[in-house]
Image (tube, rainbow, N blue to C red):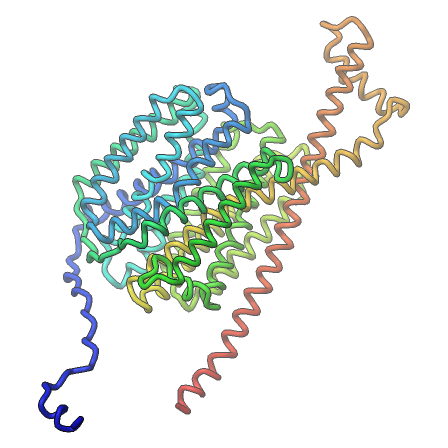
Length: 551
């Protein structure tokens, strides 16, 4: 019966249909040199605009306190609000761009960015500034993507993964030294509105770029489904809570503020729920199984470690300059040097970058960080920016050469598995860069605070007015007020206050030297881990070749 039925019924082809091949990209047409230069400059402008939107504010929080009538703790909410929305906003913008097209995404995204930048000029109190910065975290997300695409637009396919990746990241890398260089003049011209006017001007320039210069449209793909209604809120809440916890923990101190613990618990709980949802989705937004492989864990760990070590500059040296009472206008030459070193390192890297050379390039960058941290660990109260030219130049070179090879490796891994894995790679990249930077600032600044208390206790133990040298120093400090204070007791009190300030300054200098030593030792451990990884990889290749030959 079964044989008869099988002959009467029509045959059914049980073979799975072949997957649709991706559309063939249009042939590359070289652009004239002038037009190619315009596209490259546009990419840098877009990247700088995205970076300045953050760094102009974070570099001048102390100067903006008086404008908003806020304390240092309250000003911390301005940057925390930006980080709380930026990461989720970037992932959302990627999905929108992939599903609805790059042109529409760019035009609408830049219009929203311009409107938010103009809204900054209308903020006159801290609460509105915090709200606008939170929205800016999402509105600024398209700029980094557009900077990358504009750099790729004029390059032939053979150069997209070398010059394209290196210089596509150049604008964002240059934004920090550039923000520090132009901030003093902007604050003198228009206070906080001077900073916002630059953002508005650059946003309008970017809008003109998008409407004037066309770029090739990447293929569209369906990115949204109904499960995103669950995943996206969990991701937004988790990232926001953890970002706020790391940004504000040092200001309010970690174990003394109950709501910090509640934020951390909500953030971890949201991320756990997100993991459970994503593991059971048919088309997950983030492929956690791929991200949990050894290669991707190693990739993510290296990015986090490097981002932490780069805090040698953002937390260590910048914090030490504030303790030494070095003003922003005195730092313009050193930031110009850092920017020049970063640009030069990027230019050289673009000529030699290859996936196989990434470990050696990373080893070189780590060696530079170790040398810089060791040089900075000998700082004193007499140190000035000129003594940091060599170390910060090395940090500028290291920051310019580390990220492009890591990004190249990640993109190649994602593309080899399919276009749908690019979003997973983007999530890892953004998480390590954003949270790595916030984590480095939180951990190392807390370390400096603890070590300052330790050194202050040690130094203050030897201060006694019974000591002739201490008494002489108090009289010397109090003599500064001899023309306005005739009472010797009051002069001695002021002298003791000045001596206490000197002790505090010395304590902070010693604490920052301890931080540089910690970063130096941490860099050595990272170098050892990288060397072990390179050795294991080299030994595993012959075994893999023998196994494939035997098969």
